[in-house]
Length: 340
Image (tube, rainbow, N blue to C red):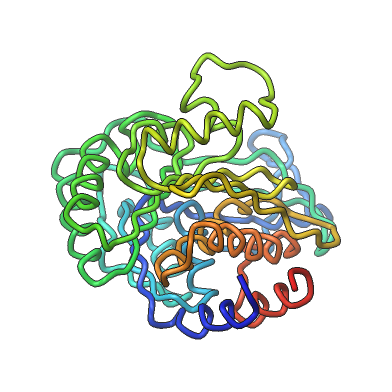
């Protein structure tokens, strides 16, 4: 990748439309002022006083936020409940300019939400125990059918589909076995369409699409009984086998070690960008995915896409306590300062 090629990619980003399919979640931060603590008259327990909220799209919403930061157009396909959190999530997605017409409302499900109580003062908050809203029952057939319908409709006007399979409870999230089957059928019909899947627990069930996982997940996908921390040789072997089995590029993120991609021309190691801390690595994988998918959709090689993913994630990890994103100007400046 050269400075000219990265400038070209960034100049064409607004022309690109990506459908993001998967588990959209609400990240809800509750800011608690300890000076206002008061005892509950009913229980005697301390009643915390919330003085502010931070509302952000999480899960698949995080990659949506990153893609929008890079100026790509985004069409969202997922599920929200008919509840207050669902309203807040749709508002948060629309605020960043995402198209939410593909989101399906299901009155039988709660909106997936990560509630994060933050106790302290601005600049010095401590996160308390998180309160999660998740769904532990399978998606109903009529909702599943609507998801597949919306996926196919949105994909017609997209250059890429980015799949974010957030949850580990089988068939309880948006990307269940029927939706995976529909994705693979779409890949067979549309070889021109970049379909990229990131799944925490089920990456081994995808085929015929680009896949992304971290070094632990790639080993588990090939060696499910492996225990402990895999060394480089095991990661390399499993990445190669996953590519051979899948027939499409495989991207493996490795934290501060950067990333590796496996494709028809072999294995390509892309070092991490060595930027100064402090860091917040939450969401780094999603940031990387946004850079990779946008690059592939605009015609970049897998090797160059991996480097773009590292550049984007190096920018977002320096944004502390927020759902960060990188702009095209930041990407170009980061490449010029660290990669030329």
